[in-house]
Image (cartoon, rainbow, N blue to C red; front, side):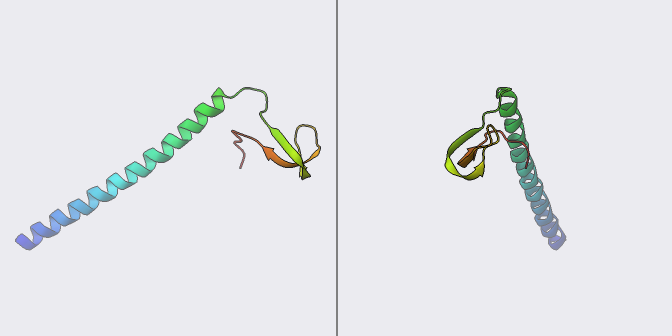
Length: 77
């Protein structure tokens, strides 16, 4: 009987640990998504794209060759 009780308690502890780990990961992902949505809504309607330097990358604003293009809150992957 003690063998079954130990196995039951061990199984319960493993199940609860897995449940809380999954819940913590889900909450973390949900918080990141919500914060990105808030930041995107708080941004202006005008594009915040900045083109820096001179190089071989096309700037989306004026189509000049630049070294870096900085686009905060870009939602397309």
